[in-house]
Image (tube, rainbow, N blue to C red; front, side, top):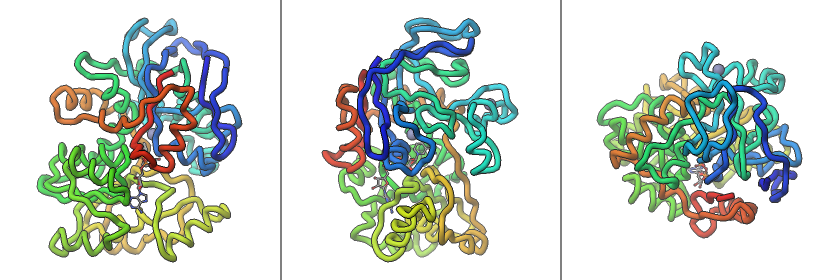
Length: 389
Ligand SMILES: NC(=O)c1ccc[n+]([C@@H]2O[C@H](COP(=O)([O-])OP(=O)(O)OC[C@H]3O[C@@H](n4cnc5c(N)ncnc54)[C@H](O)[C@@H]3O)[C@@H](O)[C@H]2O)c1
Ligand SMILES: [Zn+2]
Ligand SMILES: [Zn+2]
């Protein structure tokens, strides 16, 4: 089959590789219909997530058709149109039973690296380095999905391919971010980052009762979509002082809930950003923390900061004092989309959410390296490039 492989930082190529096979009775093999880029892939492409090996297949946000089922799979059969949640759960461990699929004890066969880095093994993730399981990703003709009955969801009739593909990752991530932010009716929510994840977080915050959502980014096309498709008030951080603007919009009180949809490759200016960038490049710390620090700084007293942006290791200048002295709650996680997929499909069917506008660049898999360039540099107003093998 054909697949997009990682060869080294910023080196991607489309190769012919062996087809996946069923290795466990709970597996399903999918023919990939669509596979999207995600901001998390950029951390791999840019070389900030260790344990990538040349030849690893990227991609974790995907829609497919069932072509083969393991002997223990009864809920799916050939021809089913399904999405897979990007973070893999086993369905059997205590965490999965508590619906915390993002804390699964069993889905990562390479437990040593995350145990060493974080104290305990973390869930496996499709196409996301050997430390997170070494699973082949979805930018390929076929993909193997483990624990299929836990991680696959049939796409209901009435939901298009272009909507469904994002129920794999961007939509449940935004939904999870709003859910764990503990939004109360009438709250003002601020969202840093207007990529696919930020856009879905804005929409989800409204669905959970926010009165106003303020969105922050620097790309005018993304800010315009945040306003017109998701209903946000927008702040361009390149031309406006974010903290001042947030104070003005909230009568001096600050946003009740702050969502970081930026992560470890935050962009910025000035001394703080230069410090982060140099230290990240020298591998002296792993995160560029401008957006998260700002979210913590601007959040109102007693508020919640919900971190969706991915961070890998250690952040310098982490404002713990602001968390303690303002009595903030900090919540985070990779997305446990198994909890939300069915609710999100219902929101789509009810016309309350439509992730399809995230798909700006449909492309043949053969052109996927070009798609990553557009997505990485946000050129041609690329929100998400989606590959069709
Ligand atoms: N928790 C999860 O399960 C999960 C799932 C998917 C993605 N993610 C993470 O979410 C983050 C966003 O993903 P995406 O696909 O939307 O990525 P993206 O690259 O499309 O969007 C990131 C956006 O952040 C903006 N940004 C950069 N610096 C900023 C700053 N200082 N202030 C405000 N905005 C800033 C960029 O301009 C860009 O528009 C990434 O870190 C990704 O790894 C997490
Ligand atoms: Zn992702
Ligand atoms: Zn589990």
